[in-house]
Image (tube, rainbow, N blue to C red; front, side, top):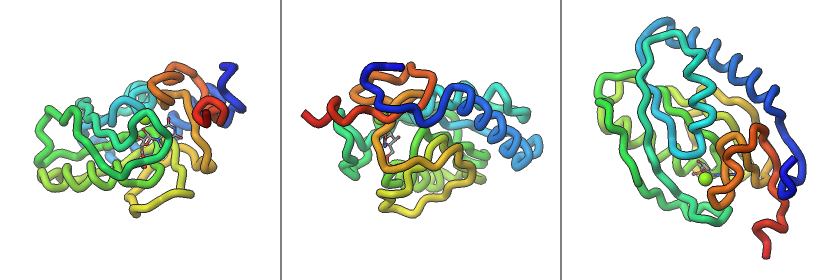
Length: 179
Ligand code: XMP
Ligand code: MG
């Protein structure tokens, strides 16, 4: 285990198994209809890679980079689009992938934007849901795991751009960010 991780919440095996279940549910939902998968950079990339391999409908893949977090652990509530979706959204079924929903601000803003561009439908899948600090009600169609109000890293999630490569989800030691 990484020396800055206090404890593991979900092992690599648990995460893989849950993604497999989610893919089955998502396949059932779309029933062969084509989807544009929109992965929110950078955190959801690991989840996206694991998930799309198990989707059985025609899939195209795109990315959006919107950030409400700097290097700290508290959301500023302001969303900045750093990289926009490049594929056509109008008339498409969108499967929006997020690593984690915390306050809900990020997902809320991205949903609003994609709806405004005339998406036919928007379905959301998030690997982790941290409901304790929710400010905006969000549409959560597929959720991997609910997690406690702690700062977590690994499986794509970072602290100051580190730890995305950890194959498990772990709680970051407070001493790392409380200095
Ligand atoms: P909001 O508050 O907009 O935040 O729902 C979603 C984004 O915040 C980041 N986030 C975290 N990143 N560990 C992380 O590594 C966490 O515990 C955590 N909580 C929120 C994340 O980038 C997500 O997309
Ligand atoms: Mg982040």
